[in-house]
Length: 134
Image (cartoon, rainbow, N blue to C red; front, top):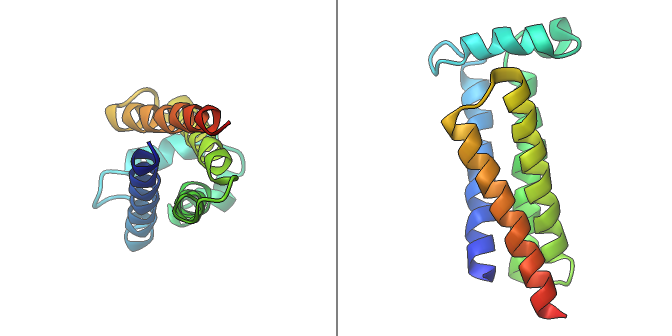
């Protein structure tokens, strides 16, 4: 189960880095089909003229919330301190909350649905591992 968690945390972290870079390379979203998503963010989120003129702030948010946290959890899993499973549980919950926000803004979609399942799997397996270690 530790191997599964290591793979999941690294996969999600690397995906967040890739998503952030994509947002920074084309902050308009035109080349990757994100332009309509930016319009929805502007319509539903607070302070659209500050945070949603383009995808640059969203890229930083994605990297901080789902990239850095997942990398930290992966690091802890490799070092095996007792807090590793708690970190993975927190990352799973954070990812599910992130996806819930995406659903609120854009509605259900296959990629978001899949990442919600990833977060749920992380959380469930982390709890199983915590209970197994007791």
